Structures are given as C-alpha cells and as structure tokens.
Length: 360
Image (cartoon, rainbow, N blue to C red):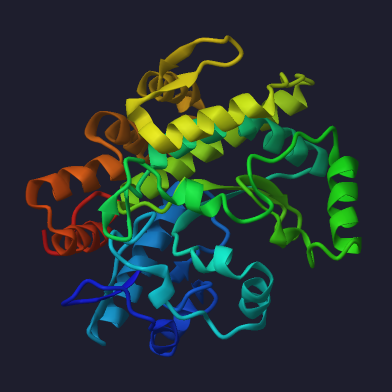
C-alpha cells in the first residue's frame, strides 16, 4: 500500500515511486492494477532465507524512496478505510483491457496478496503438486488472514479480501487435472474461444506457471510482518516438496469434493485460525489452529532439509501469537482509530526478518 505519511490514506503515486526507486531494483518493483498499489518481487532464489533477505532489502529501499517524497508503504490484505472508487487505474494496456472487460467487478479489487512460486522440474509433477495443494489452500488462508476491515468497518471476516476477490471470473480453488495434457488442452480451449489471452488470465488459488517452471500459490493475504511472509513461503515450499516426493514415489492423491474444499476456504476466510475446518478425508470438524499445528509438525523435517527451519518458526508465532487479522483487530479495539491502525501496519511493515523495526 502506498500511503501518505501524515493522513495514512492511500495515494495514487506508483508512477512517482517507479521513477524514483534505485536502478538496482529494476524488474523487482512493479505497478499493479491500481496506482496506489506497489508490487515487489524477488529474483529466483535458491532457498527461503535468500528470498527473505531480498524482500527485507526491497521493502527497505521502497520505504526509503517513499519517505523521501512524503509517502510510506504498508502491507496487509486490505487498507482498513480506503475506498476503491477513489483509486486510479494504472495506464497500461493489460489493465485497461481487464477494466474494459470486467468493469465494476475489477474496480472493487483494492486488494493485496502474497504469491509464492516454487520451482518444479517436470510438468506432470507440477500437475500432481498443484492438485495436492488444493487441500492445503484453506489452512494457508487461515494462517495468512490479514484483512478484517473494508471501507472503514470491521467486516466480521478475518480475510475480507477472499470474498471480494471471488467476484472475479476464473478464480478460487481450481479443478483437479488428470495430467499435464488435460490442463494444457483446457487452457488452450479457453484461449481459442477468446475467453482469455493466455493462462495468466486464469487467477486460481494455485496454478502451474509454465513460463516460469513453477507452481504458484496465490491464496494468501499480503502479510504485514516480513517474518510471517517468509514463514508462509517456507511452509508452502515444504508442502510442495512433500507432494513432489509423493509423485516420485508413485503415490496416488486422494480426490476430495470441490464443495468441501470451498467450504473449508469459506470457514478459513470467516474465522481464520479461530474456527474449525473439515478434517479431510473424514467428515469431522477440527480446530483450524490444531490442524495448522499438526501440519507444521509433519512438514518441519522438510523445512529442515530445505534450510528454512528458522524461517519456519514464524508459523508457530502466527498460531500462538496471532495472525495479521488478530493483530489488526487487537490494535483497533484498543483505540477504535483506523488512522492509528494503518500507522501500526506501516510500522510493522518496516520490521526486518528478525521482527525488529529499524532503530529498535
């Protein structure tokens, strides 16, 4: 979020910032649909610690650039009191085409997400991993929930971003694909029918990204704390590693009804870690926090093998200390001051991978 240092309101200043950021950030600092939104992206990294270091450096450089112009940055799933209709659209062909096609729906998309790419070395393996990640999407959403406010009001949801984004076409939990050929044929059908220009216009919560050779996980709200960002990246990489190894061993994934996965996703958006989820494959409900704890314990050895054990500790902090949504609500309940809440988000966004703000 690009915000004014004094008012804490969103500012349509992406072009101003893009012209001022250091040259060495070229390609890693980008515009998005709205001019008050700024995207930062790492290079391809060997591991999560390297990605965390790059993100810390990028956040610092962008913040310093913004502050030199009376602005600053903050990260959360939504801006607590901004109004979508007040935002300007970036002047780029892709975004003009999207707005022309989707109109009112896409103009509500004043949302901020975390996307994690994990490199996969074979297309059939990528399909297996993407299929397997479908069952993990609700717990990733519950852990990452960080958007309890919309247009100046608490919504009663831990992730307001989720139902707002759901208004768009070609979003949500994807179908299960039998193999790479089926995925490719279904995407090609959409392209030939003129529904989409290419597969990047299919905005599922998890998708193969053949141009990059990755599986991309898109379900998470943007994280305020960098420690939570890298923890989610470590968890997602560990999930993908477990699934890739299951493919290599010939393991056949279970099939779960899409409506059950969607129900779990709704429960995660509504209650976050405070609620319960359906404990697949059994038709019973368990606490989301308990499920997250159990999953983290199972995946810890994978994180250790990947060299991200320290970053993985952030998952326990989210379970025991509260997700971004918990922390936003606690801040707001103390003062009922949304401007103060955004200032707290800005301050926490400035903290590094060890959880300390500059100068603290």
